[in-house]
Length: 342
Image 1 (tube, rainbow, N blue to C red):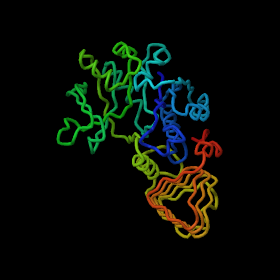
Image 2 (tube, one colour):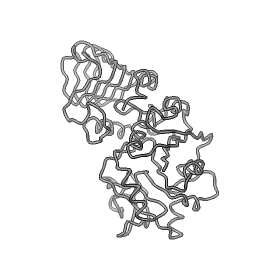
Image 3 (cartoon, one colour):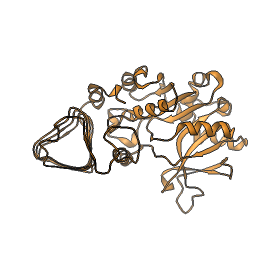
Image 4 (tube, rainbow, N blue to C red):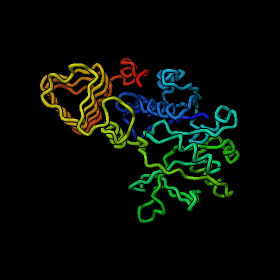
């Protein structure tokens, strides 16, 4: 089986971060979001992956290369014009369906520790043309929700319904397994969307497809709020990314020996990356994540903040509830060897 990472989106809701980098390259703790995804697919036995590119394509291609540093073989497809969530998949259909096997689709901005092996098993046992990963959500107004019968067969969808109107609280996670025949139900148009164009055809033609409900963590990092939540959930262990120094609600981790020696106060959870400089009298009150090569000036106070790789908190300043970045984030990630971290 092959996995496809959808990496062509513009990331408009993450601006201004995505003015300079594509959304899959936004750092979460110590590496880009897409690197966490590749680690997940490799963990579950996928050795070959495809990524579609559009926005800052060279940034992604240059960072991940052929994928060997991440344990997978990666091939890329550049979309001169965006083809949609499904159109981009159809563009590489020959590669994905080679050998007649089902294939996995996952958004390049997803943060999850879902068991992809169980997803594949569910797809094969259900026998449908598609299997959609779903998770119960607290606020249906933020998600497309999925309706199903007692056997888990999908019967309909609602797009971001008000809670009083919602017929389901199962949010669509955008993590799918499809059988090759899914392409038989595509329209002739070049731009194709799963929710708008393909799934309605399956319902109209009574083609069986099913849900796979998960209890594991999932966050689509679609907004600045969700990026903060996902980063801090990874820091405390609500999201298991397998990163050294994470997983504690009050832990303190530093990859820079002596970085915290001059700090006046360090109240976890705090994660400090490589090559970080922290000045005299700094106060850190978690949750705080300080990326590689960042600097915290003397006398600064930082709380509930993410400092991206290469970012700076000037001396004698206060940062509360912020996301701070400066310079070329990707170059700072690459500088400290993130492409080979596991």
